[in-house]
Image 1 (cartoon, rainbow, N blue to C red):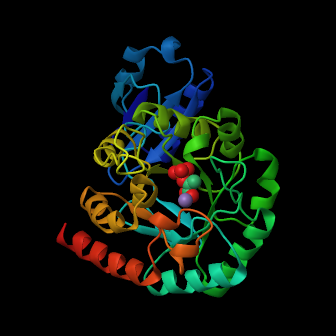
Image 2 (cartoon, helix red, strand yellow; image 1 turned 180 degrees about the vertical axis):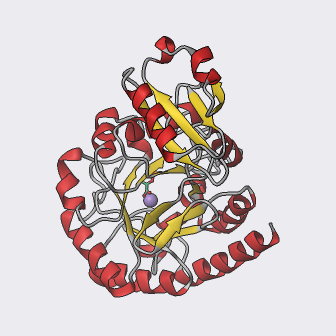
Length: 332
Ligand code: PEP
Ligand code: MN
């Protein structure tokens, strides 16, 4: 349920109302917009007398929210959420460019790529340290050492780092990580989501391979229900029947998610297509669709990448894509 307050409501009046609602066992989320304040009420709202609430002098409107996702709902929080990490911001008009290799492979590799993507305008450095590979015989990532190397690349470039967590038992290793990624394969690992809901770092939540948008928003809700409201949604393609692309990029997800939710939405054209030559057109299309950012895999030597070389663009290609994306955004 939401209660929209009238303009001119004083802080004391607001506080009084929040106290009254909290005393009835509800959790109250306050969203202070430029023109209005929205109180989002979570819990058993069936006991609330809607007529009484809407009759209060300071209340403009009361409505029930039928969707099962509440904190992630745009109705709860009409303004865009802006996620911040170091000096980078994502959402609410701040476009984020997250770039880097699929996996961290060596200090030289990650530092070379970090410097190149930074020069090209990237605002976050990505790199997998713990890799969810289909085969147990494939490179599994450098683990804790990979995170150390990402931190070296961060120290050299100032770029905040984004890296994937696969097990909550590794959380201590992520103490200095700026944004924790939850990969497609873990989108519905609810225990992991609950734990991440209790930490104070932004979470980049990737869409599960066959997850509906509602399921994705419910996963975001798991994180937010624990108190962590810094969630970035990432559309990375869904599995379908055509083997020409690794996945099928659902670009309608971008405007839809932004309509349904206030959380920033980024698109990963690398995992969505699986082909480096398709990254540029899909990155431009994502920007045109209104994405708040892109996640692009970049490798200095794609032919010899230990993971996802076929979909990795070179630093030069990334620089050109970044420019073209900026042109599309200006045209919008
Ligand atoms: C990745 O970002 O390297 C990755 C494994 O992505 P996804 O979870 O989308 O497959
Ligand atoms: Mn990858």
